[in-house]
Structure formats: C-alpha cells, structure tokens
Image (cartoon, rainbow, N blue to C red):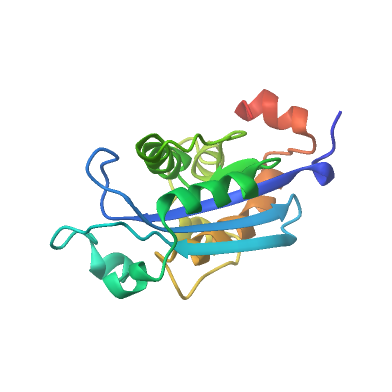
Length: 190
C-alpha cells in the first residue's frame, strides 16, 4: 500500500475564451502542486500569448477580466504546455471539473504538438457530487469551498481557483476515507 503522504497532486485550472475546445482556447493556466494534506510545494501561473487574436476573441471579459495586454505578457502555448508537463510529471492531475480543463489542455496539446503526460485525472467536482448523491447542494467550486470554510477573493483567476481547489482537496479526500493510492485507484480510477 502506498500512503497518500507519498503522493503529490498537481491542481490545475484554466481560464478560456469560451466553452468549446474546437473554437476556444486557454487564456490563463494556474497550477498548484500540493501534498495530500494541502501543503503547497509549488505554484505557477501564466497567461497564454497567441500569435494573433480575432476581434473580441478574449471571450467573456466580464467573467475572467483578462485583457489583451495581460495576454501579451504571457508564455507561448508550447512553452506553457512544456512547463505544465514538468509540473504534473510525477503528480496526480486534479481539477474541479477536470473534463473541462483537461479537454482544453489536450486540444492545445494537439494543436501545438506537445503531448501531455497526465496521471489521472482526479476531479474534485466528482468527489463533491459523490458525497451528495441526491444532488441537494450546489457543487460549483465556490460553494464546495464555502462548505469547508474556504474562499477566494479572485474567482475566475486560474491561480486563485487552483489554490481554492487545492485547499478543499484534503477535505474531500478525507470525506471519502481515501488514505492510500490504492484507495484512489479503487474508488476513482486514478
């Protein structure tokens, strides 16, 4: 049995131009590498700079607040994906609604020819929903975090959302009685 104390998690969040992996792209990437108890080992955030931007193509500015000026200071997508691979290399990939974030990262991975090396994913949205089979509560990140006494003053910022997800991860693991890597594999296929 491998204790969770020997496990590292790379908690990832993205901000995107929209909801379609075919038509939209990642604007911002945040990663927080943590231990099972929530101890933060490393944090990384960058905007993704594209060669060209169509008119209005930064997406829902009223949601994420990301400007073209901020994007111009970011990393090129290939650099960001390579850095992501370094950070997630020996960690379990975690995200709140992992299908969404991983879908966008895989789309960029295919566009730019930088294969992602993902171990997981582990989805905190799924972890939360499994604790509420009747779906009597909201499972939005902000609401899940509030149930565990956590909050952020910067919603829809990739690093802040990754930090918030990392902060609730230990509570969700404990609520599911996950004590070993084998428990993760049995219950969540990770």
